Image (cartoon, rainbow, N blue to C red; front, side, top):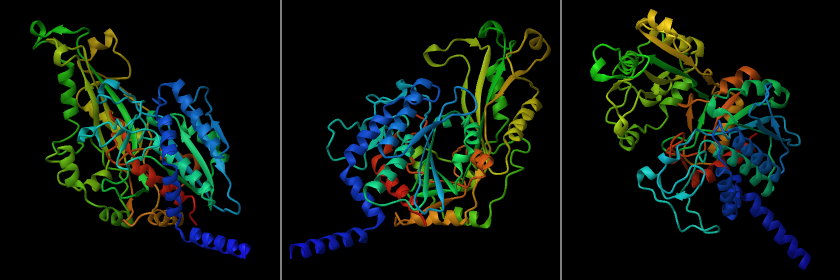
Length: 508
């Protein structure tokens, strides 16, 4: 009798288990392990990860290797062809009988930080919980102790907490949750974590080329960037390209007294702002000749997808304090599909308490150009250079010599950074449709499909080097302050991201 009862109990337990959805099983696992998941993540975020800090970047790579090994993933570092390349962390898991391979990508490096700009009590690499964004009145949670319940609406602060250590941790935790709940991936999995994304992925092409054989796949899934403003889950089929340009306009060889030399010595700050103003009109449209000429038109399905994206402009205008956006009334999503020219920063002498009555010796600005499908980095930057020449400037790539100062009345140094083109994957690919189906199974809300994201990633390099299909599946909240002070990630988005990525590891 006891044997029969035991068998019956086992059968009932099996039926209950198998009646659960994948999402339910993953969620139950997460709910039982929230404290350790968050503790592990706080430890990860506490490791400084500014791209230029090579010592700590290597510590991050070593930490990821350790996390992968703890989850049963054999991990190695992939270097480039040049010595001293920041390594990518790589691992793979073969699924018996699988015919497809998916590679999950995230990056572990982060933007520079100025601790003085962070709110009182917040440290870039001292992650703490906050109740809401600091700019919206959020407060530091001072009562939390390890093991206490974690409010899913809390945010975890810290550089990289959203961009993009959240991608790394949700990928690894999704795989771990599958294994520990007795589920097995239906596809071969590989994991690729980059350490140079925030400085333009300078050596990514070299790494992909050198390790081409290891990196063949049916699809790369990029886990980076925010979900839609509405909070809905999103799949991005493309990204903008990106390149920076540094401009330096020169005046006198030394700063001059503005009374003694005013009206006579040319002011480089005045000249620079006039030059920048000539590049765009009052509606934000770029006036540089040919800037929009080679944009690849959207397909019918891409236009249909854009039309279905929830309109959140009213919410953004109120939240950001914008009365009238640029674009001359064009929809936000339409503007995301066009190239941009942005002033990242401008500098000349001092302001505020340090301001002096001088004519400065130079003025500097950094431009950020976002490219869409059809644009080419070299063509687009050359158009900017030609526009500058048309304003009467002699363009150089070095600080001017005395002879050049005597010969040319208007001098500007232009330095172009390492950039990359835009990338876009067709929305009707069979494997793309499988991704849509898998993510839709994790949410009742319609998944937002974006032909192109507003941000940039080096996905063109994957397409060019590996002939790869690439999709982006963001997991973090849109109001995460990425690249800025008080960066944060909402806890619930980490949990939902775990469910999303686990579903992708089980696609058919």
